Length: 470
Image (cartoon, rainbow, N blue to C red):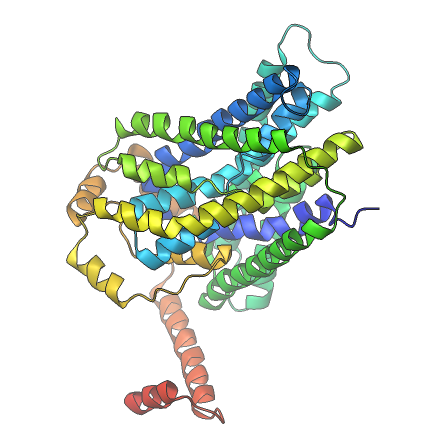
């Protein structure tokens, strides 16, 4: 009997905090200035990648070159192994202070890619459970239609819950009771996930869009205490969930009866690299036609190189309900690909990025000074590295002149949002309320400072800081 973490426990308990936190603490300015490119890479790129891997494995299986998987099994494997997790790359990016556009493209793609891969895998598995398939439509068209419906409906549920929470917090003043306010935020956070899963849509897609929209509207209706509590609590939960998942991934090596099909592993790796290349380079050249700041060939190479696989792919492989032998083959192959890409590609990221950085010559003096001050410590914590990415003060364009030009050409939605949506969904605080918030934060700061001063043990830095304040 295999010792395995239940996929249901993973998708219901561990994954939602990670996905919601990535959307809620997102640096929306950087993200949305590159949203078109990010969506193209995350959605169409994932579809291309899954089609190449699934189609290649299926055709080679028919030719008896690799372990034979049927149509649904091949494309389910292709879709789940398309989930990228570039945590090592983001860690290197933070240490080397790379181009901010490259940083946000890799980070943004990884956020949406996880959700897209989960939706795509679930959609393909529905074909295997469909007792009455439509004879007038091909399986491919059924898959595309189901994917589009699931994607849009799930995102819509998340947006509706987020907007509802914004209106609720705008008209119901809970700021004097932060505990109740925080509790309501948690309810609105998990609500779209449970509803979407209950009607057989994607809870992950719903909770991701809920987090993005809540941070844009509902966050500004909260009291200062709840704003800080919400951000830090979600980061803490995401960090704990991430730690549990990676620990389980390491233990999984010894927890299963593995069935290694060498030819399938090798060819799957080849198709992963090929699919990533046919995803990044053509789409990169396509989006460059509409971008002011072009994505260079070296940047595309780093994006291709950052296609590490992670725990999402492994969890999806555990979720498969195929025959025992086929399931063992897919789980083992997925685990080997994850370990190979993480160890080999993750280990080679530092020299690759250092080499590519020679192409980034247009950095500002302010950015170079910040780079010299920044610590070169590297962590493989996904939550920590993504937190550094979304907190970055980088402009999403390389120069301030380009950034100012982009502001001058704000699209119609940004203007509509500023003129109509923000006033409708966010509270307009009175001068007295603003003073109360400021007084509340001052009181909390003074209380923290007093606790620091009476602390029995001071480091040299803390004593120096206290001396300077006095």
